[in-house]
Length: 265
Image 1 (cartoon, rainbow, N blue to C red):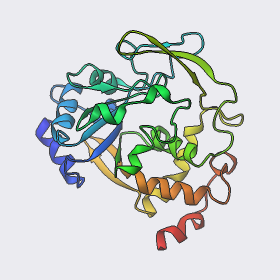
Image 2 (cartoon, helix red, strand yellow):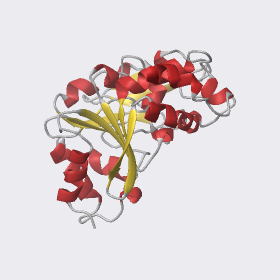
Image 3 (cartoon, rainbow, N blue to C red):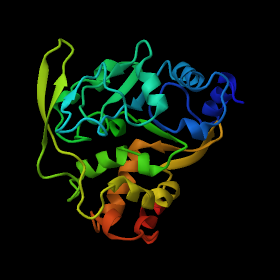
Image 4 (cartoon, rainbow, N blue to C red):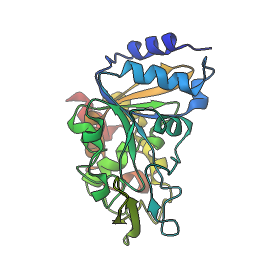
């Protein structure tokens, strides 16, 4: 059974200092038995990164759509896991106004970092919260999940304007603003005619990220984890996709020769 102190030691063993901007995708089940349960996990993370910015995805793409078009950030639950929903309820946590791909954060300038997402028209709009991770030296910690849950890679594809990643027609949605008014948002969702779950193909980049030192294998509780550097992830994806921007969907696997040059540079 893990305690706060043991989880804290594991974070330190990753080489993290607690001042980072870090986005966490997580599986509570993979972490194992923790004294105090999921709340203890959040206690450890929020305390460790008290001098940084701790972010969790609080996506609502599973519930917000044309049939249920109103996103109320104060009430809409996250569709991406237990820890994300518990995190939302914590004092001091701020949630962005993106109707389908919101993030929540606590720490240094959380409100400023998360501001303006109601103006996005795609899941991971260039210049938005996901894209800003690479600009601020951000980290991504995948706790018990792989790159199929690494939403930042969607952001890279949007910046690179990879074809066949977004629906042609937007959904008409509404965001409940802090003053109670509603803002109309036209949001395109992720869509590829060949692959209904695009992110499942992100695992084809796993070895490239390890070889090019964009990700490291670490542990948190019982969970096998990946600690990623957002800027380096961006560089590797851009390099691998350059010869064929749609290769993650159209090619069954990616040959390691595709990234050898980048690793040797």
